[in-house]
Image (cartoon, rainbow, N blue to C red; front, side):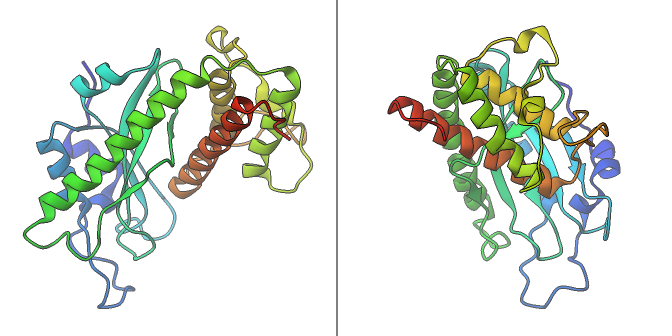
Length: 261
Protein backbone atom coordinates (compact mmCIF):
# COMPACT_ATOMS: atom_id res chain seq x y z
CA UNK A 1 0.00 0.00 0.00
CA UNK A 2 1.44 3.41 -0.94
CA UNK A 3 0.91 6.65 0.94
CA UNK A 4 -0.84 9.11 -1.36
CA UNK A 5 -1.11 12.88 -1.05
CA UNK A 6 -4.57 14.21 -0.32
CA UNK A 7 -5.86 17.33 -2.13
CA UNK A 8 -5.26 19.50 0.95
CA UNK A 9 -1.65 18.33 1.14
CA UNK A 10 -1.09 18.99 -2.55
CA UNK A 11 -2.49 22.51 -2.26
CA UNK A 12 -0.05 23.20 0.56
CA UNK A 13 3.02 21.75 -1.19
CA UNK A 14 2.33 22.84 -4.79
CA UNK A 15 -0.11 25.78 -4.74
CA UNK A 16 0.79 26.66 -8.34
CA UNK A 17 -0.72 23.36 -9.49
CA UNK A 18 -4.17 24.69 -8.63
CA UNK A 19 -3.96 28.00 -10.47
CA UNK A 20 -6.99 28.56 -12.66
CA UNK A 21 -5.48 31.35 -14.70
CA UNK A 22 -1.90 31.88 -15.89
CA UNK A 23 0.47 34.54 -14.64
CA UNK A 24 -0.52 38.03 -15.74
CA UNK A 25 2.96 38.35 -17.24
CA UNK A 26 2.28 35.94 -20.11
CA UNK A 27 0.84 36.96 -23.47
CA UNK A 28 -2.67 36.30 -24.70
CA UNK A 29 -1.26 33.67 -27.06
CA UNK A 30 -0.30 31.43 -24.12
CA UNK A 31 -2.39 28.24 -24.00
CA UNK A 32 -3.13 27.64 -20.33
CA UNK A 33 -2.88 23.99 -19.22
CA UNK A 34 -4.37 23.38 -15.78
CA UNK A 35 -2.23 21.05 -13.68
CA UNK A 36 -5.24 20.37 -11.46
CA UNK A 37 -7.16 19.02 -14.46
CA UNK A 38 -4.27 16.75 -15.43
CA UNK A 39 -4.12 15.47 -11.84
CA UNK A 40 -7.80 14.55 -12.06
CA UNK A 41 -7.29 12.80 -15.40
CA UNK A 42 -4.34 10.75 -14.07
CA UNK A 43 -6.23 9.79 -10.93
CA UNK A 44 -9.16 8.65 -13.05
CA UNK A 45 -6.67 6.25 -14.69
CA UNK A 46 -5.47 4.87 -11.37
CA UNK A 47 -2.35 7.01 -10.91
CA UNK A 48 -2.09 8.52 -7.43
CA UNK A 49 0.13 11.45 -6.32
CA UNK A 50 2.83 10.33 -3.89
CA UNK A 51 5.33 13.23 -3.88
CA UNK A 52 5.34 16.87 -4.94
CA UNK A 53 7.66 19.86 -5.02
CA UNK A 54 7.63 23.43 -6.27
CA UNK A 55 10.03 26.29 -6.87
CA UNK A 56 9.80 28.55 -3.83
CA UNK A 57 11.34 31.61 -5.38
CA UNK A 58 9.44 34.02 -7.59
CA UNK A 59 5.76 33.57 -8.35
CA UNK A 60 4.62 30.77 -6.03
CA UNK A 61 1.10 30.93 -7.45
CA UNK A 62 2.25 30.02 -10.98
CA UNK A 63 5.84 28.74 -10.78
CA UNK A 64 7.39 25.44 -11.84
CA UNK A 65 6.07 22.40 -9.98
CA UNK A 66 6.43 18.64 -10.13
CA UNK A 67 4.05 15.93 -8.95
CA UNK A 68 5.01 12.26 -8.92
CA UNK A 69 2.38 9.58 -9.46
CA UNK A 70 2.42 5.87 -8.84
CA UNK A 71 -0.08 3.20 -9.81
CA UNK A 72 0.22 0.35 -7.28
CA UNK A 73 -0.75 -2.53 -9.57
CA UNK A 74 1.30 -1.30 -12.52
CA UNK A 75 4.38 -0.38 -10.44
CA UNK A 76 4.59 -3.72 -8.65
CA UNK A 77 4.57 -5.64 -11.95
CA UNK A 78 7.40 -3.56 -13.43
CA UNK A 79 9.51 -3.12 -10.29
CA UNK A 80 13.20 -4.00 -10.70
CA UNK A 81 14.62 -5.11 -7.38
CA UNK A 82 14.29 -2.13 -5.02
CA UNK A 83 13.34 0.23 -7.85
CA UNK A 84 9.72 1.19 -8.55
CA UNK A 85 8.61 2.95 -11.76
CA UNK A 86 6.60 6.17 -11.59
CA UNK A 87 5.31 9.04 -13.70
CA UNK A 88 6.36 12.66 -13.11
CA UNK A 89 4.17 15.59 -14.15
CA UNK A 90 6.11 18.85 -14.59
CA UNK A 91 4.37 22.10 -15.43
CA UNK A 92 4.21 25.83 -14.76
CA UNK A 93 1.74 28.59 -15.50
CA UNK A 94 4.27 31.23 -16.58
CA UNK A 95 4.91 30.10 -20.19
CA UNK A 96 8.37 28.83 -19.24
CA UNK A 97 7.71 25.21 -20.20
CA UNK A 98 5.07 22.90 -21.59
CA UNK A 99 3.29 20.43 -19.36
CA UNK A 100 5.17 17.13 -19.53
CA UNK A 101 4.88 13.57 -18.34
CA UNK A 102 8.27 11.98 -17.70
CA UNK A 103 9.16 8.40 -16.92
CA UNK A 104 10.77 8.07 -13.50
CA UNK A 105 11.79 5.71 -10.74
CA UNK A 106 11.86 5.61 -6.96
CA UNK A 107 14.61 3.62 -5.29
CA UNK A 108 13.29 2.31 -2.01
CA UNK A 109 16.62 2.31 -0.16
CA UNK A 110 17.01 6.09 -0.44
CA UNK A 111 14.79 9.13 -0.29
CA UNK A 112 15.28 10.64 -3.72
CA UNK A 113 13.78 9.57 -7.02
CA UNK A 114 15.25 9.83 -10.47
CA UNK A 115 13.70 10.79 -13.77
CA UNK A 116 14.74 9.32 -17.08
CA UNK A 117 14.86 11.33 -20.27
CA UNK A 118 14.21 8.50 -22.73
CA UNK A 119 11.07 9.19 -24.73
CA UNK A 120 9.78 12.19 -22.82
CA UNK A 121 6.08 12.62 -23.56
CA UNK A 122 4.72 16.17 -23.82
CA UNK A 123 1.13 17.24 -23.46
CA UNK A 124 0.19 19.39 -26.43
CA UNK A 125 -0.56 22.96 -25.38
CA UNK A 126 -2.87 23.59 -28.33
CA UNK A 127 -5.48 20.90 -27.73
CA UNK A 128 -5.61 20.16 -24.01
CA UNK A 129 -8.61 22.42 -23.51
CA UNK A 130 -10.67 20.98 -26.31
CA UNK A 131 -13.08 18.09 -26.07
CA UNK A 132 -10.36 15.52 -26.78
CA UNK A 133 -8.27 16.52 -23.75
CA UNK A 134 -8.59 13.05 -22.25
CA UNK A 135 -7.30 11.51 -25.48
CA UNK A 136 -4.26 13.80 -25.45
CA UNK A 137 -3.43 12.75 -21.90
CA UNK A 138 -3.89 9.10 -22.84
CA UNK A 139 -1.40 9.53 -25.68
CA UNK A 140 1.15 11.28 -23.46
CA UNK A 141 0.72 8.67 -20.74
CA UNK A 142 1.16 5.87 -23.26
CA UNK A 143 4.47 7.36 -24.41
CA UNK A 144 5.64 7.77 -20.83
CA UNK A 145 4.76 4.15 -20.02
CA UNK A 146 6.61 2.95 -23.11
CA UNK A 147 9.62 4.90 -21.85
CA UNK A 148 9.34 3.17 -18.49
CA UNK A 149 9.27 -0.25 -20.12
CA UNK A 150 12.40 0.61 -22.09
CA UNK A 151 14.08 1.98 -18.97
CA UNK A 152 13.27 -1.19 -17.01
CA UNK A 153 15.09 -3.17 -19.70
CA UNK A 154 18.07 -0.83 -19.38
CA UNK A 155 18.18 -1.16 -15.59
CA UNK A 156 18.08 -4.94 -15.85
CA UNK A 157 21.04 -4.84 -18.23
CA UNK A 158 22.99 -2.29 -16.15
CA UNK A 159 22.73 -4.49 -13.07
CA UNK A 160 24.79 -7.08 -14.93
CA UNK A 161 27.47 -4.65 -16.15
CA UNK A 162 30.47 -4.59 -13.77
CA UNK A 163 32.62 -1.46 -13.90
CA UNK A 164 36.34 -1.33 -13.27
CA UNK A 165 37.79 1.28 -10.94
CA UNK A 166 38.92 3.28 -13.96
CA UNK A 167 35.46 3.15 -15.53
CA UNK A 168 33.83 4.26 -12.29
CA UNK A 169 36.18 7.22 -12.10
CA UNK A 170 35.53 8.28 -15.70
CA UNK A 171 31.77 8.03 -15.23
CA UNK A 172 31.92 9.99 -11.96
CA UNK A 173 33.96 12.74 -13.61
CA UNK A 174 31.46 13.15 -16.44
CA UNK A 175 28.56 13.07 -13.98
CA UNK A 176 30.13 15.66 -11.70
CA UNK A 177 30.45 18.11 -14.56
CA UNK A 178 26.65 18.15 -14.77
CA UNK A 179 26.58 19.98 -11.45
CA UNK A 180 30.01 21.60 -11.12
CA UNK A 181 30.74 22.44 -14.75
CA UNK A 182 34.38 23.16 -15.53
CA UNK A 183 35.33 23.78 -11.89
CA UNK A 184 37.99 21.54 -10.42
CA UNK A 185 36.49 18.83 -8.21
CA UNK A 186 37.34 15.41 -6.77
CA UNK A 187 35.17 12.97 -8.75
CA UNK A 188 35.85 10.16 -6.28
CA UNK A 189 33.71 11.90 -3.66
CA UNK A 190 30.72 11.12 -5.90
CA UNK A 191 31.48 7.42 -5.48
CA UNK A 192 31.24 7.51 -1.69
CA UNK A 193 28.62 4.97 -0.62
CA UNK A 194 26.04 5.88 2.01
CA UNK A 195 24.76 2.42 2.88
CA UNK A 196 25.57 -1.27 2.67
CA UNK A 197 23.10 -1.82 -0.17
CA UNK A 198 25.31 0.33 -2.41
CA UNK A 199 28.42 -1.84 -2.20
CA UNK A 200 28.10 -3.23 -5.74
CA UNK A 201 30.18 -2.04 -8.71
CA UNK A 202 27.62 -2.70 -11.43
CA UNK A 203 26.55 0.25 -13.58
CA UNK A 204 23.12 0.56 -11.99
CA UNK A 205 24.48 0.69 -8.44
CA UNK A 206 27.25 3.12 -9.37
CA UNK A 207 24.69 5.26 -11.19
CA UNK A 208 22.49 5.42 -8.08
CA UNK A 209 25.38 6.24 -5.75
CA UNK A 210 26.46 9.13 -7.97
CA UNK A 211 22.90 10.32 -8.54
CA UNK A 212 22.14 10.48 -4.83
CA UNK A 213 25.39 12.30 -4.07
CA UNK A 214 24.73 14.86 -6.81
CA UNK A 215 21.12 15.51 -5.78
CA UNK A 216 21.22 15.08 -2.01
CA UNK A 217 24.52 16.87 -1.48
CA UNK A 218 26.45 16.48 1.75
CA UNK A 219 29.70 15.65 -0.07
CA UNK A 220 32.91 17.70 -0.28
CA UNK A 221 34.20 17.51 -3.86
CA UNK A 222 35.85 20.93 -3.96
CA UNK A 223 36.57 22.01 -0.37
CA UNK A 224 35.74 21.26 3.24
CA UNK A 225 32.34 22.82 2.68
CA UNK A 226 29.63 20.26 1.96
CA UNK A 227 27.42 20.67 -1.10
CA UNK A 228 23.76 21.50 -0.59
CA UNK A 229 20.82 19.40 -1.64
CA UNK A 230 19.30 20.34 -5.00
CA UNK A 231 15.69 21.30 -4.40
CA UNK A 232 14.91 23.39 -7.47
CA UNK A 233 12.55 21.47 -9.77
CA UNK A 234 14.30 22.51 -12.99
CA UNK A 235 17.81 21.69 -11.75
CA UNK A 236 16.67 18.34 -10.37
CA UNK A 237 15.07 17.44 -13.69
CA UNK A 238 18.10 18.55 -15.72
CA UNK A 239 20.64 16.58 -13.69
CA UNK A 240 18.50 13.46 -13.41
CA UNK A 241 17.68 13.32 -17.12
CA UNK A 242 21.20 14.11 -18.30
CA UNK A 243 22.74 11.62 -15.88
CA UNK A 244 20.47 8.93 -17.32
CA UNK A 245 21.70 9.80 -20.81
CA UNK A 246 25.29 9.49 -19.60
CA UNK A 247 24.56 6.03 -18.24
CA UNK A 248 22.91 5.00 -21.51
CA UNK A 249 25.99 6.17 -23.41
CA UNK A 250 28.31 4.34 -20.99
CA UNK A 251 26.32 1.13 -21.38
CA UNK A 252 26.53 1.39 -25.17
CA UNK A 253 30.32 1.77 -25.05
CA UNK A 254 30.62 -1.17 -22.65
CA UNK A 255 28.56 -3.34 -25.00
CA UNK A 256 30.98 -2.50 -27.82
CA UNK A 257 34.05 -3.06 -25.67
CA UNK A 258 35.05 0.59 -25.95
CA UNK A 259 36.66 2.88 -23.37
CA UNK A 260 34.35 5.26 -21.47
CA UNK A 261 36.76 8.16 -21.95
